[in-house]
Image 1 (tube, rainbow, N blue to C red):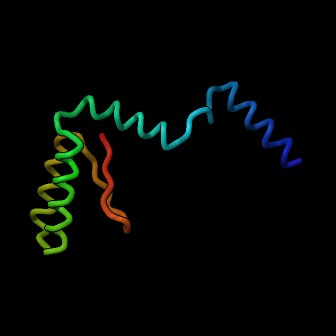
Image 2 (cartoon, rainbow, N blue to C red; image 1 turned 90 degrees about the vertical axis):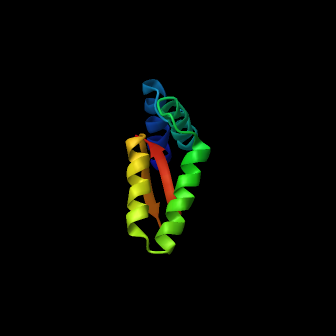
Length: 90
């Protein structure tokens, strides 16, 4: 019964154009498209994130917040996770 439900769900998803692209590929493509709308390079974003990481280690919260705000003003959103900071285009 479960096997039949999976087949039905997959078939419906294919008809609707869902589930046809790997999620990592989809979000990677969206990130590339978003980069066309900003004036900062990925290398510069990563450099600023590293500067922010160092500022946070040194407990320089003012500088850390300033870097976050500067990137936000350029259309880049930061997300802090236990594994580190990630980013995406607004």
